[in-house]
Length: 389
Image (cartoon, rainbow, N blue to C red):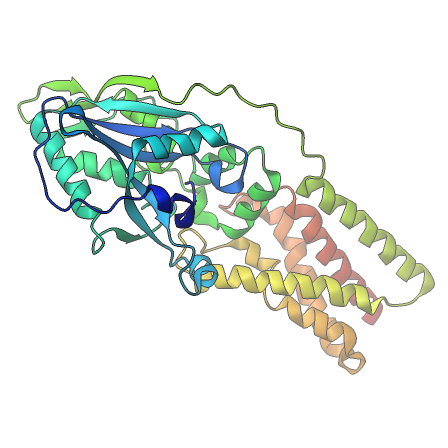
């Protein structure tokens, strides 16, 4: 979901309602869905908010669950640890829509088919949640975000239950987010590296609504089934508010992770050949490679075992990218530990030899760009075993 920086929207933020009032018969409650936009990493997933309009009371506000405070202490560490606190903010609609017009993203409004009592309850719940003492919540990308919160509040206050009728094609969480980042191969690579096998679970029809576009599709054909069994459409009208933005032509990203890492593999393989031919040892090469692998492994270890992010454990990438690879860096520069280096690289070589062909049995997606990276570590460990033997 879009990562709003609170300072950007500070001029548009309004204080929470000081007093409750009754909405008029003209009041409307809508779901606003901003389209994904490839201008930045944080815009590729789209965004969802709730709009409340009431001409009689001169009310036109947006309740936005996508605000966070970048100025908080230790923000980067807390974000990496999964302790990011988002908040619900009440903004004037004009300012909210203007922001998306400036970035070139369309906003689609779905007016909900609610009776007066349902509108009043939803409005009061939103106003209560927007109070300073209530507005902060612990953000969770898959299960508690700017898209799931509006769904939950609408489902809670309609009189009856919501029946979703849109066609359901089973997809994994990874397939859905990778589709969003399809024009950003490096972002896809990072997500595939950081997210473990739980991301490859099939999402239920309801869980798919963690992404705004899936929410919009689900609401479009949904019905409210009253306790007496009668039904009514959940959405009474749909319109594009900020203009239908035609898809922009994407410049092909030539230097994808797959290409870059295969070029790196070829370069390392050539150096390894020279090393074998000259009967020498490029210690600096192993030191650099295993140092980088070990540091990257520390990040994966932190995400898997320390952070609160969902779906980061178990992560089979830890087999080849783990903190233990730092040992390979140390052993490459300490000559007297040759025997220890032999055992270390022998174990690493065997593990990596089994990993790639065995990945077909692992319930986790293998990004193709992993293959040359695993191949580099396999090649260098194999060379060290050969040399020491």
